[in-house]
Amino acid sequence: FEYQQSRLGNSTSISANATASYTRRTEKNEYTFDLNYLGRDGTAADDEVEMEEGGTGVMIGGQWKHKFSKRFDAYCKVAWANKYFPEWTIKAGMSYELPRNWTLTFDGSFRRIQTFEGVFELTDSKYKLLGWLRKFKRLYSASIGLTKTYDQFIVIGGLNGFYLTNNFFFSGQTKVQFFPVEGDHSHIFATVGLGTAPENSIIDKSLPSTFDHLNTFVGIGGYYNFNQHLGFSLAGTWYTMYTQSENLLSGTLETNPGFGIKYINMFYLNASVVINF
Image (cartoon, rainbow, N blue to C red; front, side, top):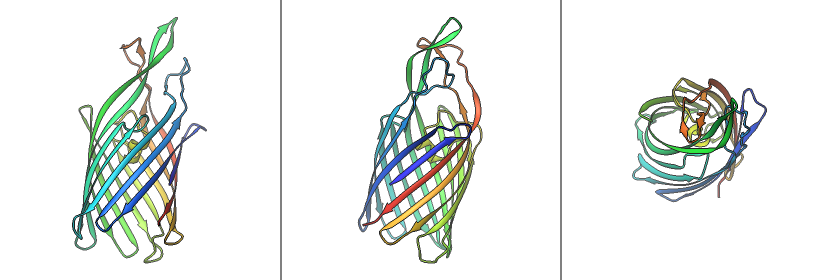
């Protein structure tokens, strides 16, 4: 079970989403089913420049992972959402254990992203909201990663490439895990990343409407293993992201759209509980 809470740096309002996931493991197969839920307030006042349609978003997904050999495994995942998450997500990937405690990973994905833009009519020098226009975009991505395992450390690095509306974007990240007690799953970790595209979890759970320009993030957290059946994780992440206001539309036809371009700070707090049985 996971709970994520986020807040804009210049705002006191808080948004959140929750995830429930179940994984069944056999000797060579692993099956995962997850349910994600979030709610957002609507900002549909006539004098708003940046507007968002409020409501509830639900994403349902399933994943199958198969171990083909001692060193090689692969997975595929499909998810569907009604709002706020990518409408369709299709992922596939593999990992291969190399000599000297190295692991190589490859992943590819397709997301059908839905965005909502306010439809306005200019009356008496004021914009009047007429309704909401939904648009869809196709986002393709590919990732490569390397993991190095030491006695008490694990170092993970990854590079992601994205293709959206005839443009290419990238992001990269590094994560370091430290295990104070050898043989115990409890650890602390730190992450850092940058790129012209947001980090993958932001794309999946926050669905930013714009890419391009440099985004950065740093994070720190830890996982504590109470016993063989129960574990708890807590992490905080600070993102500095480029954002852009919605298009201003007159009637149903786009006419000289106006944009508000800026960087925003987003603070995320993630808490999760893992139950093994």
